[in-house]
Length: 217
Ligand SMILES: Nc1nc2c(ncn2[C@@H]2O[C@H](COP(=O)(O)OP(=O)(O)O)[C@@H](O)[C@H]2O)c(=O)[nH]1
Ligand SMILES: [Mg+2]
Image (cartoon, rainbow, N blue to C red; front, side, top):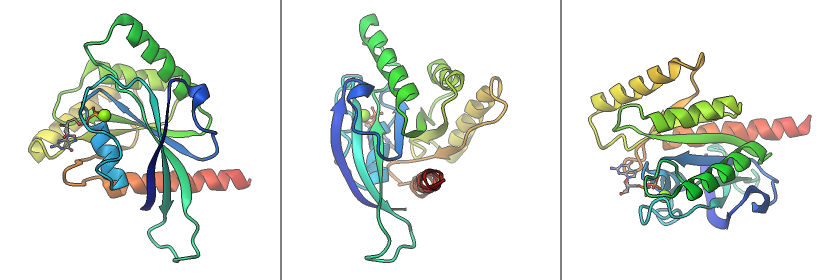
């Protein structure tokens, strides 16, 4: 997949205020500081698209980015670009928020994830430097209870040795096996090395094609 356009569109405090649900949508979520903004910038090939670092846990909004992509083999002037939304969701597990803020986050996220009709897939980001964390597993199990489709994206793979990353990925997937019969698709990524970019974009393209096909029936 070739990214033709990646543009910030709007931030919404609630799912009812999100843009018109007229194209496939992909949401990115994870603990604050997991590398979500860096991953979004890496995927869109725009280092300024999502703000990196800054003040984590502050932006409690649903951020829509307008994307247009082309398949790898496209005919210039002939192949139409496919529109889709990339959504940057506020992170969880941020220690310094109040109970009230946490509750607000939960309600907003649950409503968005469960009611946004065009949401095709949720990418759950996991820091590949750490052992499995309860908060990540709890969030994933919640997605399971809600029967929502998701993938796992392990981030910051360049920060540790390949051996350490493989060990953490394996322990995380093993921890998931305790509650999950089938494991979701997973990706190992590094925003610095652009690792995992092609695979994630390919996955999104396949989903976009399936959504289009389903719409024709
Ligand atoms: N080495 C390395 N650092 C990363 C990577 N992704 C993010 N970071 C760093 O981790 C910190 C948090 O990243 P950010 O994208 O802002 O995380 P967010 O809070 O989840 O949006 C920043 O200092 C990034 O530069 C990566 O793939 N490799
Ligand atoms: Mg961020």
